[in-house]
Image (cartoon, rainbow, N blue to C red; front, side, top):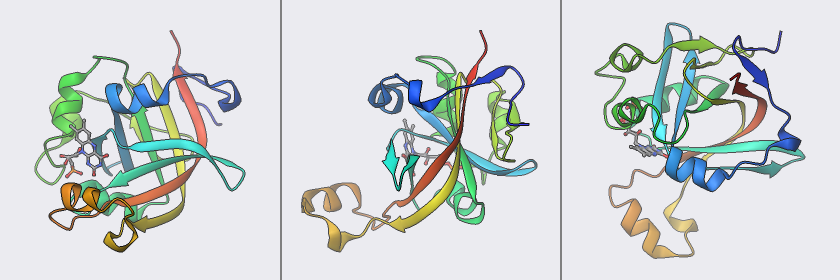
Length: 175
Ligand SMILES: Cc1cc2nc3c(=O)[nH]c(=O)nc-3n(C[C@H](O)[C@H](O)[C@H](O)COP(=O)(O)O)c2cc1C
């Protein structure tokens, strides 16, 4: 069954939301792992597009994040969006505390749910993207054309790992 209870599956060809606003203003939770063994973190850097004839999402995860271990280990991850201003405290918590030190669902009240491909997302989300990894690499100093970004964003040499992933399912909360 490719359904999540309480959500309807959305046809990506009809998706017409402003993804710049979603990422930059609404933020998202990047979640990887399986029931009883997952982690989630807030993210606002990423992308949506088309590559290799597939709908894709791109997530950027710094190596020191606890989430990194999970995005590396598991084949899939989810992106959960909650709506403007909704669950801001929860997203701030997940974006400032580490799953190494805290049980994030317990601390925030967010309820993990298992998606049809066996990934973890959150019941309170308004929109969930299920993503299957296709390609991963690290941002590299040598590859910058605008060198100022490297010194400004990666002074600690903690270059993001990025994951280009096929969007397997997009689910919208039923109103
Ligand atoms: C609004 C916002 C956006 C963020 N975006 C990213 C991001 O795109 N990539 C990233 O690696 N960290 C990002 N972070 C930082 C992580 O969410 C943060 O370090 C978190 O505590 C990591 O948790 P973890 O150790 O449990 O993985 C962001 C934080 C906030 C508040």
